[in-house]
Image 1 (cartoon, rainbow, N blue to C red):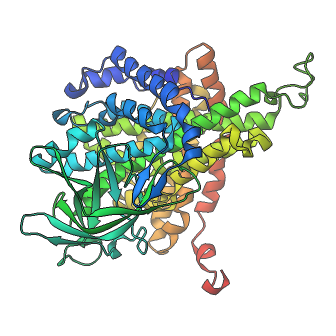
Image 2 (image 1 turned 120 degrees about the horizontal axis):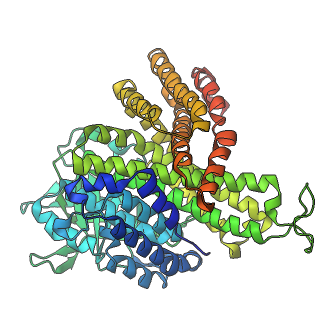
Image 3 (image 1 turned 180 degrees about the vertical axis):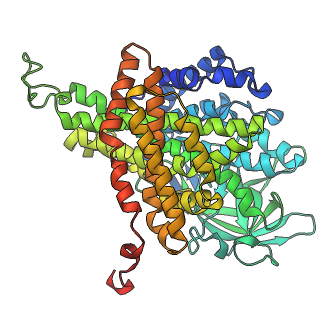
Length: 577
């Protein structure tokens, strides 16, 4: 599958829509990121992903990851591609400069991550778990832990993995059974079994650093008694060299629907040496530092899948001759017209494009809030980023999968055949809706925690900001209506939830989709207002009109469902299922 990174759209979003040159110049830590430097970084990321990584995607899927006697091997073509990612510093792109990271803005990292996901999601899974692990260590680790692990992980010499899930526990981490026994030397002996450990064992690096959740002997019950531990594959000597093999091993890898070249491990910890990361019994909070990064990253995976799928479908629709236009032959010298003459094919392609380009703008906006919170101490931006993270994870991955299925539909029967690659995109995209907290969990988090914790104050503040933005005049009325609807629905749900305990869970998925549609409408109205008067800009405006005419009206149906109570969801007898 060919892949072309979205360089032109990236430039438009960074410098025209968000005007990052003005923002970054006022932040000392980011002032060195000039427009020329930023464009050079995007261009190199585009070259790496389009020319080096994308060609390994289908080959890697066909070969898959393999397990034998605890040894996990990745596809042969992954080795050089991963080394180019590592040696280029891409795993430390937003990392702490004090330990070898590059300290780049999160907005820029979001763009690069989308490219990496789009070009080969199985390969980048080894990278994203490393990035998330470094964030947790940098945030919660001691100076010695940071110095020991971060430089090697930023450089890609070592990888990271996140060990949360146990077969009986799933999302309910409070009932985990893994145990950590304190040792006389200050370390801990870790025992237990974890499942679904992405990149838990593989052959791309010389050491793999696990972040493992476990409970101390005297820990409080439930999630309040969970601690987080650094458990490396090879112990690290005082001089930084690798010592003896630690007491854990891969018991197997999963045979999955998609991302087949990503090794998803069962890991058995048998008295493995671990080191406390952060405070005792505060492991879940420390792990969520990593989880929140991964949730945005998984949203970017959905976005990347959607864009890759759109590129395949658009190219196929241009070339495939099938039928005649209802207005008369458009290709009279040929046996048939292209698929692009058929309105339903255009509907699918424009839906993909509207969600992809809206999603890219949304992801960069979330990245901007993270940058303002981190580098500028902006507490409002920090709260807003927390509100938007579950939307980014769930809405982008939902629309990415939807776009992949639409691409498969454009291909017709060929979309079901392996050689074309689209069926792989569908299989690979599906997981983004499941891991790092299913999208139902994200919806419950958005409404039940992020909105309810302040009775919608952060959301209302954001809506006020959106209402004051300069947007294309033709879309102002529809945008105003959408913003009013979001506030109206939010107020109604908050009020009614006091008398209906099941209401939040019953309506949260529809509520998340409504918020996603509304925020995309705001971004499309803004993009249409500043789009240049050239082919690129005209395509932006046409896509904006399609979004407002054909996609945003879905919000009316969502509102109709959101005003209902939970009875129709909860009244069915258990035995009737």
